[in-house]
Length: 192
Image 1 (cartoon, rainbow, N blue to C red):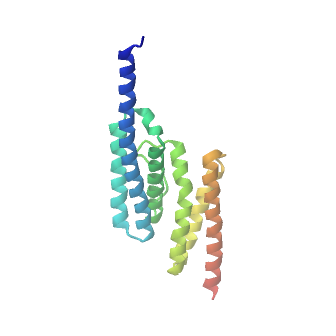
Image 2 (cartoon, one colour; image 1 turned 90 degrees about the vertical axis):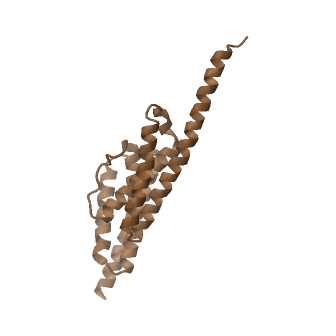
């Protein structure tokens, strides 16, 4: 009536994937959390803690890539994509804070979609950094924040982003508008 052997093979394959997926969700969630903590450490100017947190996040993501390299479809899981996006944001924001060029990320397999998603979030972090800098009366940093965010938007604007990326791009543009306001307010304070 039923080919029991075939159904057993299907069941084993599905259960195996479900187990791998649970493992991926747990580790990716941990990597995402560490990347978020890295960003917060950078906002507090705690470079040492930020580097350590980013390294731990990277270790988890690299471990997943190595562990499941033969299960390519598993990397389409939302939890992995979210963790990768957060790592990219943290890494690019760290590079900004350290005065480095925002460049490719070669320590992980990063597709253009993930890179653009992470990049779109960086201006929001730059706004927070500019506000902190303005409060500390570091007006040269505030102006630099605006310049970098503007450069990011100028690159993104030519990509004709749609869907999810368009929403993220619109948020990045709002961050740039907020930075323009901060620079304006700072310029008024400098004259006083």
